[in-house]
Length: 108
Image (cartoon, rainbow, N blue to C red; front, side, top):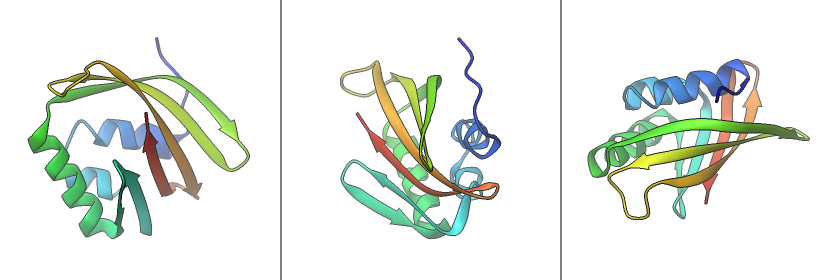
């Protein structure tokens, strides 16, 4: 199933298949990610977060639902991979600024 995503969010999911540099480029200069109880702010921390996550687990992420709630885009994606509890559906809460992501929070 394909879901229509705003360009910055579609770019994020495409970059997630690549590397930390590609993911970090999706964010504003002061952009941040909240994941598993930690916050990663700025390009260097976001790049490191992606690098660590990619070395711990091999996974694929397939967005299947999207809705907008005020200024927040909520995308639900199925993650399948080498982690406990796979597969799992996660919700991604994106706040955009122009053509970049200002914030992303990932929740179960």
